[in-house]
Amino acid sequence: MGLWMCWAVLTVAYQGLVKMRIGDLQRPDRALEWTQTCTFKDSQDHQPYLMDPFMNEQVCWDSEFYLSISAVGYDDPLVRSTPVKNGATSRLSLNYAFFPVYPLFMRLFYFPLRWLGWNSIPAATLAGVAVSLLGTPLALLGLYDLVRHMGEDEDTAIRVIWYLLIFPAGFFLAMVYSEGLFTGLVFMALALLRRRQWVWAGLLAALATLTRPVGGLIILPLAWAWWQDKTPEMLKQTGRIRWRAILSTWMVLLPGLVILAWKFSDWGGAFESVEQTFFGRKLLDIAVSMQNWEHAWQSMWGGSPATTVFYGLEFGALALAVCASIWLWRREPSLAVYGLLLILVAFFSAVPQGLPRYVLPVPAIYIMLARLGKNPVFERAWSMASLLLFALQALLFAFDFWVG
Picture (cartoon, rainbow, N blue to C red):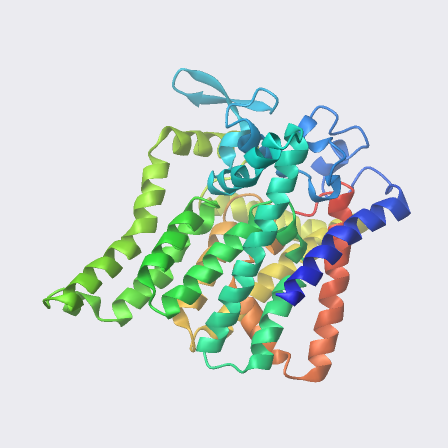
């Protein structure tokens, strides 16, 4: 807990400190073609949720939508909309591209702050940071417990959570983004599943499915544990054994039922429309994804230095996550397959960006690094490299540059 508190304070303070010291960066951000048109000093002047000075270093890009949903709701007139073919509706708010659980949890803090007299945007901002920071210790405790139950010693378990905190995209765990809450729900659900606490594992997994689009993949480790316990045979028994088997079966099905209910609701239809129309994302669009990733690979070697660094981190995160999941395959196949599927969905979403952030919930990464970290040279080298990249990414985010 002390490690988490120090990390939280230092991360938030660092972003404010560098902004005070540097003043501004040379604009625009030349990492990608589209970032060169929307990262000027006045580029966010038409987005009020990103303009309030309170904790502004922790707010950028997608933060706008979470702040809007928590404060007003999905149909907020202050947020941009996009034309879609959706029945009688000609335009939909971009808010519909974001799942509801994170902004819903933000409201637990937002309304009390409003009652105390806070203005709307500062209240929503503080609420978002609070939910992210409270989700992070869930991730740390869940990952620690998961690793300990895998037979690792105390030192290795501490390294696992340390490597999560200092991962190059780990600063997102303290921003107004859903990563902190989502990673916390996933890792704690996996830890509770290892203890066969089916009710809590199922409930947290169901919440995860409505926090990020890839949340439904957690059904895989649930189903794997259900099968390992020989639950089909237990369902044929009588008494408490049968009732426990029925309960575990429902907990495995719960996340799937939740995501299906969402998908076939008006919210789910609006989500798909906005994702495809405005953000250009589509589930398992293999042909377009391969074409775009090929272009990204070429841009990494032939583009500007900023583009090289940006895509270098993208491909580096991809390689690390894939290698770690393969490494974990023989020891923990359900976690390995879960990680690989998460990577697969992110990779084939048609847009070649965001992988350092999307692989944050892949437990294999931190488990493999912690095992390698038993070598003191690797431990110090990785910590230094990861922290330097962490600082770079957190700095860029504070100045509203694109970091995926």
